[in-house]
Image (cartoon, rainbow, N blue to C red; front, top):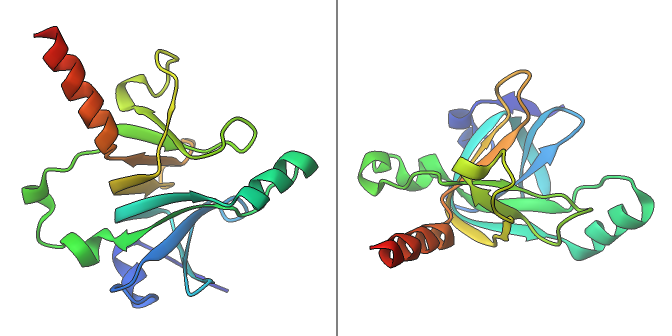
Length: 165
């Protein structure tokens, strides 16, 4: 059985100098942490840096055809603790977007501003990478969430505010 660990113990199970692969584990209600194509541990909270959002097309197509879920969507990145242990305050990277993926609606992961996450003001935009991702499944009764710093969103907000001035 794989271990359920907190954010700061993940590095005891993986090589923190190499990227990890995170996916939402629907059976255990947590996130699974993989490296070398093997699940190393499970966690309810993890922060990653320099992330890529990946969806395997064949897996998505199989879900659409069969109606049965399978593991085919991942966040790949470096453990935040191993990259930015002493620099959290100086980087000033703050989450500004909620990320989700639904194989029946989307081809890729999509993001929308946190301020609009629960409304329908803006169509979600595809997202492929982020400087920082927070995967949280800790709060009972609250759906798991993935929030991130969406650089493209920051650029859109800056362009909008400049056009208003």
